[in-house]
Length: 550
Image 1 (cartoon, rainbow, N blue to C red):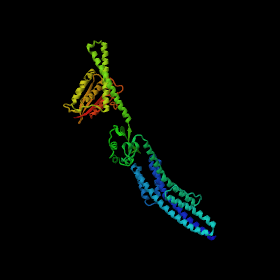
Image 2 (cartoon, rainbow, N blue to C red):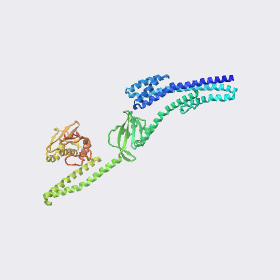
Image 3 (cartoon, rainbow, N blue to C red):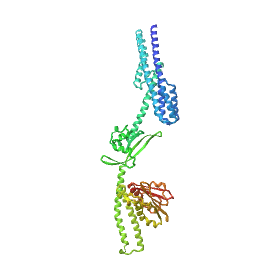
Image 4 (cartoon, rainbow, N blue to C red):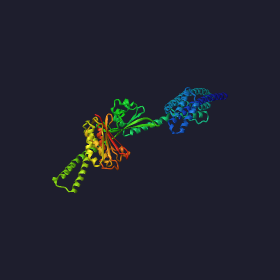
């Protein structure tokens, strides 16, 4: 019995020695390495949510202080010192340090993880050695007593075997492994320490990865569900994504776009090259499946933490609206053309009534005929404007561009509006340089625009006032200006004055169709010119257009 007691004592001493050694090694891993991993995880999460407030920043600095006190591995001090300097710069407003801080945190984690693996290997060897000694001594004890040997080795060997198996599972990155020792001795402590280690490693392994994967899948689902063609770029112009609609329009597979520089991908694709470099806001015509489709190009910056990190291009399909607009233009042209015939017949009938051969008219009848004539002329003018507008919208403006003298354009305009100006006692002051060089324009269309501007100026000028009409040199073009001193135009309406069917509310004078200035803009822009207005309430209006020199 004394020998058995001695053997048992020896087994106990050896078992306690090796198990305590393994326990100390595991505790050292927790104290030296896993705490550093935990501090790095706290700082990484705080850096990701830096804008949430002071509590997050205090957590980061507290974790950094604890890390500086827990430097135990070779090379860990360098990363920790770098992190401290980077954090100080970041806290002072240098946001460019954030990627470097992440690299330093990754370095701290990497050093400690390598140390964990190394220490785990040593711990496993110590456990294997303890198992061997205990097995030998237990074999000797088996010879001395079956009952004693049967109970004692199981008590000692099973926990060690589970611990060894658990360490092997952790070494294979199976962090779901847990030990379930119900004893309150060293085995229980070892199991608790082991489980804490495994749980923290499991949290680190899965928390960030799962969140990133979830957010990535959610973003991809949102992008794929968009009905408009959408392409995303980062701040280095690398293509991040393109949904199914965009891939179909570009006729490219996803592998040829995503992850590639935009200029490289656009080298062999005309549509993508147009989207990247052409900033013209006009609709884009794309032939898809043998049908012409029209898309409106829209772009927007992607902003994160007040910093532009990329941009997107969206092609919005407006084919249906384009078709409706074309149908409307054809309808206006058809109706205007049909109205012109009866109006012309009415005008002829009015002329016959003026002829004495058809019989004399009383004063009342002449007054009625004059009223009908004015209404008929107004209708003819409106129908003509509608016809001109429908031609302008369809792009079929018949132009006869040739060198023409600015003086000839002014002379034609003055002859047209002189009667209207005299009737309202409005004086027109004309200023034009002598021997002004010719402009390259359609004389009839340009004179029509100038007549329209003069007619409006006379209409909205007070009686016995004046209108200034000037021609000035702008280098490569001549600028035609018409200035009145009437009521002026409010800033709210200046941006809309050239829109079709728009009329300034509460404007005095004869009401028009709201098409004159819209047609004027179409005529001038078709001749490669520009048109605009400057006006302030109470100070009159200044309309102008410029035409290139011949």
